[in-house]
Length: 178
Image (cartoon, rainbow, N blue to C red; front, top):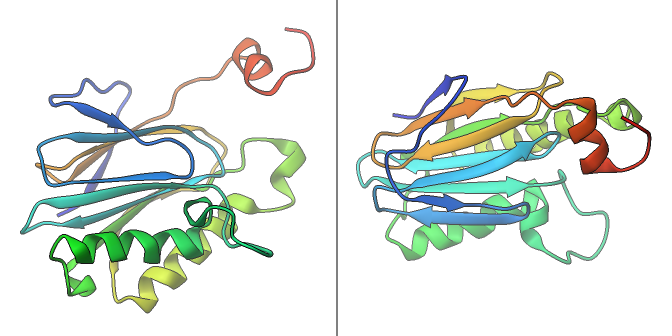
């Protein structure tokens, strides 16, 4: 069963597979799937607790406004794509999967009015409901960045919230003087 555990620090017990923005990874090995610096982006974890197969998706936006350049960029198109990959690995009943959502925050004041993080969460809930997948846990919203570590062997999801200083924010986003 999927469980989110908020921790100050996480030390992986297995090999870590990094999942970048607009990427996903699926594993049935005792690996740790990890993604970093989630702001308004949304991490979607899908897990089959009996078969011990898990997926981590790092999406950027809720849905495309036109042509889809990369389906993994959008919550609406990424989830079906990854479900198709899980089907290829023997998961034919999607309602046997569990889900967890992490991220969807409003980090930057300049983009807060766009509500991108909130819209990402809303879209994920709609798409998962459509496929009959229960959301077991979530750590969404707020104004903090999150790092995610998903242990396939246990179903545990460890979430840390690194503290970003003004200096590191300036390096990430440019401009200003620290």
